[in-house]
Length: 402
Image 1 (tube, one colour):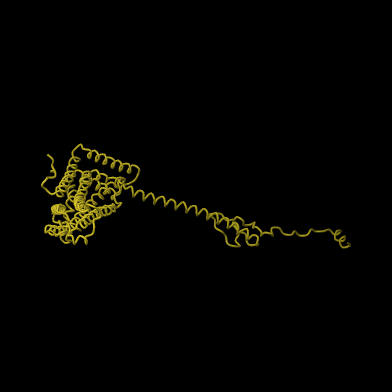
Image 2 (image 1 turned 60 degrees about the vertical axis):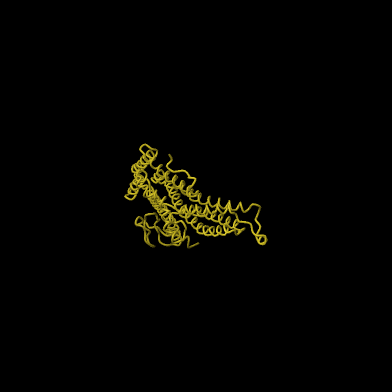
């Protein structure tokens, strides 16, 4: 026999459908976890393989000289413990994940609903939806009625022939579809994510697969928020439709013709169908904003090693640039000293020793120690005029006669 009963004929359609879907979703989440947690299952093999790879990566990083800090080691052991606790212990998984997702939305609606005036927040939402569905069915049987001949001229014409029957029947279809689809889709997605939860939890071990765990958390969070939003939207619809239907049915049973109720009812049903779809989209869009902070390095503090390597490379580059700048400065200083010495020699200044990197320039007028005793003369004064030669007496008399 099936654990979840089928839809009974006497029960309400909406409550039976939503109850069956909810039962199947819960059974899928708990039954799949029990099957995956059994010894020798696929999950056991995956967890063993992931743990082996993680330890191998840590050992490899230690072999290549990357030390493991206290922070990275602590986080690695915390991740391993959290993964194995949630994937192999049903009490931990049920307390932290299963009950939060399945029962948490109903508890929040029960707390928020009475203060906000939401109908069905006390857990009777499905029964109230069935009552509204029965009233819609009864109104479709009664129809809008035929107006009196005098009032027929003041009644707006229908958009097309047979619109009253189409609007009343279509309103009931939209009402049932909105209730069953809004609640059923959310619960089935929740059950599917709970069934594969241990696999997504195992992806938390590595940095490259952590995005899969984030996506799983986003979907679960989105379904939880969507369950709250859909319940509130349907409760607001009941708060509007139930009194309105009760009034319309009382007037129709009294024989009053209401030719405009078909259009009004169709607009209300279509409006809340769009509203529930918008709530689902908004909840999904909100859940996409969830991100895990980059505080979980996987293997031997890979992020810290990347940062330290980047700092070391920048320090090496800075040192190299300093050495190049010092060399260029030495060359420029040497060239400048040569030009200055040449200019001063041409001006007749004191001799300067040629500058070379690592030597100290001498002030003006100071002669180098290796030039002591044979100082160089200024430019243009290297040679002196020789004294005239001595002449003989005969040459002197000859010159005097001349």
